[in-house]
Amino acid sequence: MLSNKTKYGIKALTFLARQEHGTPVQIATISKSENISLKFLESILLTLRKNGMLGSKKGKGGGYYLLKDPKDIKMTTVMRALEGPIAMVPCVSLNYYEKCKDCPDEKVCSVHSLMIMVRDSTLEIFGNTSLADLAY
Amino acid sequence: MLSNKTKYGIKALTFLARQEHGTPVQIATISKSENISLKFLESILLTLRKNGMLGSKKGKGGGYYLLKDPKDIKMTTVMRALEGPIAMVPCVSLNYYEKCKDCPDEKVCSVHSLMIMVRDSTLEIFGNTSLADLAY
DNA sequence: TAATAGTCTATTAAATCGATAGGATAAAAA
DNA sequence: TTTTTATCCTATCGATTTAATAGACTATTA
Image (cartoon, rainbow over all chains, first blue to last red; front, side):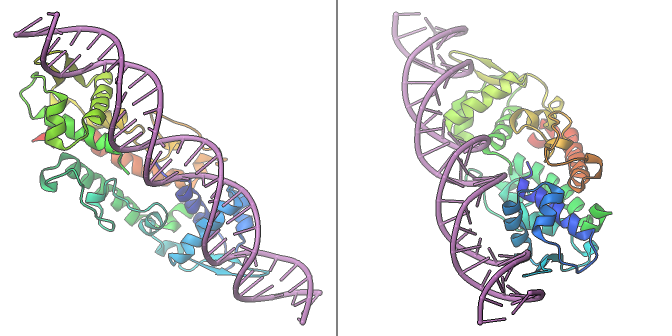
């Protein structure tokens, strides 16, 4: 299941992608427009900023804005920043690999091979979808 | 992330698929072979039995066995029984649909359209993969 | 009737999630 | 220089879910 964090994050990014490029938008504006708790959204945007997707400006006229063109923000980046690994199981994760304690041999594991297929197909979608695809 | 419950369930089903068809296998046998807590596995196999995938036999010489040919057990069935919805978000789930509280219009929602793509590709894999594909 | 093996319900510990609170910091305007 | 505006950051909390465990019950076989 997708966390609310990720869901809200994608919605906020889409909102920003629809604005004039570079214009800061306040958290409160997005919060109201997308029905997201202000404080929760605050922490989500902070995460996205730390991951290099958003810039921010403090004080009057401040807010958040996209640092790149929406078509250059791939959903793999967004998903990894907000949701974590794309793979359903650590032992097939490219970026967060971890061996299963219970599994003596990955090469023979039925779960492993199944989850590699799922990972690849999901990765293809996220890799070929940009924020621009979602926003327009 | 895939729950241990599902991971163990798939491993157990694979184990059973590799046995001679119809021969009961004890929980303890699977538990030891696959490094799964006996009691936890017990509840997992019970779930699979209630979902019509396994039969069971009590007493000496008893155990669990597959009710169908492995090639007739699709991973969609297994996943839904153990993990629940295949979709990452209830508003794109075919079997567990639920409207998002925060979302005024699904047709315009960026998360919705993205998650439909993911659901379809995942569904295609699970729908075209049977237990037999994993076991041999 | 004793041993075997699945059935079922309840409980618990730990982790995660969603949300909230509240003060700190920086920028702009007065 | 002070006030206002808006982001930054850390801590905490309650609810839910997950993984696992305990223990008593039931059916089957020898």
